[in-house]
Image 1 (cartoon, helix red, strand yellow):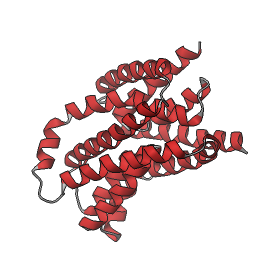
Image 2 (cartoon, one colour):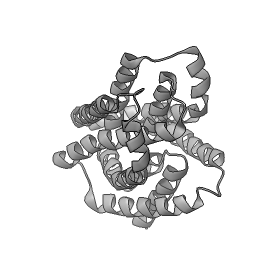
Image 3 (spheres, helix red, strand yellow):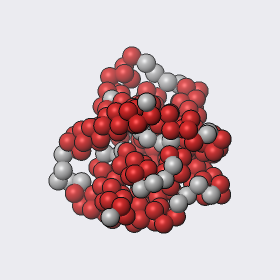
Length: 249
């Protein structure tokens, strides 16, 4: 029964990842409910959702090629930062005691939820504040470390930074966001696998469910209102925030 619930959560995660992002809000608590400690659940969730990210990057290859030729943004530098930052974040997770991470979890989910909810406000903020080349590099350092450590909301954080940098082409921004997310998660995935944090049976269930959900999400993307999906993700994030705050009290 628990495997079925984990599989359904993974399917829903893959589905909403295509439409709005935030799938880890479902897979992470589902793995905890299945009996995994928080750190192992976070690592297993990251590894399980990774194949879907690779598939998305393949679909976005045309955008990545265009981004690599755009002189406004240093894609090689930000790619290197994403890879190294993801590794640092993954290593930080390894040295975090499980009980400490358990107490940090509600704050991480709350932060990711607020970032996700404020995603549509980044253009207004860009009028008041701008990032230069050093600023976007520093922002990517922080996002990459956070992404390797936990990862919730990294897509919105990167889009916000790119908007503040002055980019407006959403196709270009989404393409480089996908590339950077894959790189930081590549480093984190390798770290978690080598460290033996991944619970492979549950990870396999989540990976299959998420890929199936992503496939369904692609077909539904043109029909479902993205705003409603985002609202659902924010609601889930708020409910999980309250739940984990109560659980760790």
